[in-house]
Amino acid sequence: MNLLAFDIGGTSVKYGLVDPLGTVTGSGSFPTPPSLDQLLRNICMVYTELGADAAAISSPGAVDSATGFVHSVSAVPYLHGPNIRELIANTIHAPVEIENDANCAALAELELGEAADINDCIVIVIGTGVGGTVIKNRTIHRGAHNSAGEFGLIITDGNPDTGDRHVWSYYSTVKTIRHAEEEAGLAAGSLTGEELFSGAASNRIYAKHVGRFYTAAAIGTLTLQQSYDPERILIGGGISARPELISQINRYIDEVTGPYRSAFVKPDLRTCRFRNHANLVGAACHFRSLHGELL
Image (cartoon, rainbow, N blue to C red; front, side, top):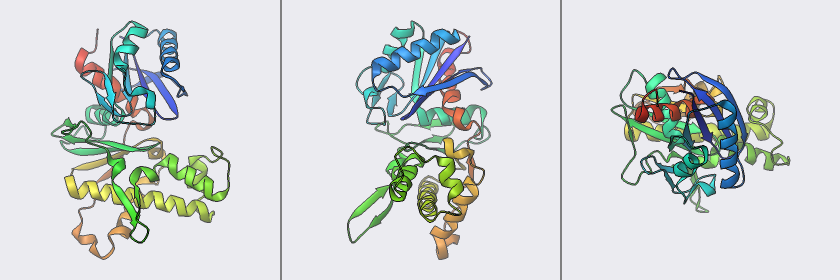
C-alpha cells in the first residue's frame, strides 16, 4: 500500500510516502494555501502524482481523530469547522485518517523512535508555535477537553509592574525570528532561523532573542518535568536539527534554577529521531494502527 502522509503547518504543507519502517520517499512541500478549497486541490494533485492508495493527515489544532473534526484554534483557521477528514476522503476517493500534529510526532517516536523503550514521555514540537503530547503508559493522554499538550500556553515570563505576560508560543522559533527582524529593522521574512541562531555569537540583537528562546524553552521543559515527571522529554520541529539545541537548553536550565538547582529533577532531553519527518511518520503510524499495513 502506498500511504501518503501530509503535515499541514502554518507556513507550509509537507508530504511524503511513508512505509511501515518509517522511511519517507517522494517527499516535498507546498506553501500553506490561503483557502480550504485550494488545500484540497493541492492534496488531490499530490495524491494523484505519487500514485497513493490512502492518506494520513497531521493537522494543527485540537483534532478529534474519531470524528475527523478539528476544534479549538490554530495557525490555519479554515481547518476549524468542517469535517476535514471527510472532505479530504471525498476529494481523493480513498481512506483518510487525521491526527493532531504533535500527537503524530509523539506516535512516530513511540513506535519507531526515541520513546520506543520507555512508558512515559513528553514530546514538544517547536515551530510556528509550541505544541506537544503527553504519553502515559505508552498511550497518548488527550485530557478531559481533548487539549492535553497545549504547552504553548505555559506562561514563561511576565512583568508585575506592567501586567504583561508571555506564553511559551511567543518564543517559538518562527516568532523569535520575527521579533529579531522587527528589532533589527529587517523586512518580514528576510531573516532565516539559520542566520539568527548562527549569527547570535556576533550580533547583539540576535543574541538577545536567541537567549529569550532558550530561556523560555528551559522554563517550559522544567515546568513539564516537575509537574508530570516523565522519563524523557523529546523535542521536535525544525529547530531540532541544530546540534547545540539540547546542550543550550540544559545550560539555560542551570541558569534558571540557579541556587535551587538541586531541588529540581533535570529533564532527560533528547531530539526526536525523525526530526522534520516526525509528523509524516506519526500520521502514517496512526493510520496503520487503525487499518493495518494493507487496505
